[in-house]
Amino acid sequence: MSTRRQRGIALIAVLWVLLLLAFLAASFSSSTRTEANLARNLVENAKAEALADAGVYRAITGLAIPIEEGGLRVDGTVYAWAFGDGEVRFAIRDEGGKIDLNGASVELLHGLFRSIGLDEQEAAALADAIADFRDADDDRRPQGAEDMDYQAADLPHRAKDAPFELIEELLQVKGMTGELYLRLRPSLTVYTGVDIPDRDTAPPDVLAALSAVDPEELEQDLAEEEEGDDALRENEQPALPSTPLSTSLSTLEEGGSDARSEFGIYTVHSEGRTAGGAVYGRDTVVRVDEGGEPPYLFLAWGQGRRELFPVAGPQEE
Image (cartoon, rainbow, N blue to C red; front, top):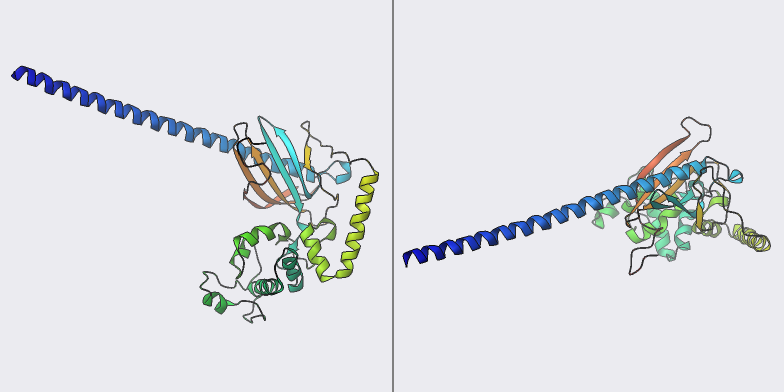
């Protein structure tokens, strides 16, 4: 009986050891699969980032060529480019057509805010707050905000009392929200310093703001736009820009202007998508000087939001 008891205890011990080994094997297998998935995701993200960066340099190549010679448009036209085993989409905007946060008047800023739907009081308060944020004095504008106002609102920031260096600094201004910032960002710049943006390359919100400041210009803009639409209807659809590369581009969204401003500064938003579905966005601001040394110079470089590829759903387009 003693021998049987010992055998039973040994059997139970062996079963527990086997159970423990099975548990360790399952844990190791799960950990291995997780690490493999993480490694695969890292590789896919790295590929997507490389594709997005390739799109930036492809855009710069097109910017170095005049429009009439096959260069790329700078009015937000979305270009698609099959590259490697993935796809790249990018769009270019001329900074010269945007409202400069340091050079624009309070009236122009007010017009911009009204054009995107803010009411009179909200637009006036935000325009004054931006002016107080960037000027060197502590004199508060009628509806503006200086240090005491930031402190009273229990905000972590204070008026900078110096020019904007980055668009992102707009988030520190009293009254600015994240949603409003995203709405305004495509219309703003800090790279030109001019009081009036270039009308020929201005996006719709900027044109609306300019027209609010000078109603006579509104009639002129509407007349020119109507003439352009009539000409487009009478003529054949414009051919896509030719490219100096063997890999051709296609346009997903046609722009309406072939103009470029004199500044030669552009925002390039590029996104790369791998065959596995990973997407990476790149936002850059680049100064292009054809024949200069260097021929281009990056003024800003960072990760961008996903905007040009549809978000994965039941069946991604």
